[in-house]
Image (cartoon, rainbow over all chains, first blue to last red; front, side):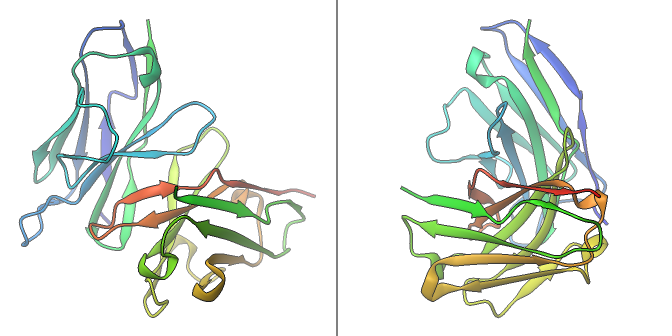
Length: 113
Length: 118
């Protein structure tokens, strides 16, 4: 089974400062079609998850451009250029190497300092 | 506006069964694959199952295969999850999520809580 491991698990950030979350996969998520099957989701407190980034680096509809995804193969990063108060929550990466079977990372809890 | 509304969650005794529903609106339900994902209290997300747009293809997480059955009724814009032989470990919020062409989950319901306890 493909395992995705996130770090850090807890991330305190000052508003206006950048933040970065890493997601490492036990197998390459780069498909022969050229796509990396790695998504990022944010679950705000008391809410259901929402899609932020799909296929490694594509922002979902309505997602602010301060969010960006990068990486390929086994190493991926979610970057927030300037953290806002509304960005608080738990971030999950999710792999789909053998779609439609998917697995999520453990989650990274972002909190405001 | 895309809406997914889960229902059917309740308190159930160990060994019991439950059928969860997800009512879809605001999009052409029959054109999209659908998924179930659950989240135990204070824990992360666990994918449970997938069903293709017409229902011809179905997949389950290996660890959950056998007790869960996903189905859909495109005429009723509804998705279902039958869960049998419930255990306390099945206590969780159950979400339905719409799948995209890239297998991302672009819309989620608010979830329905299943509590398994004697």
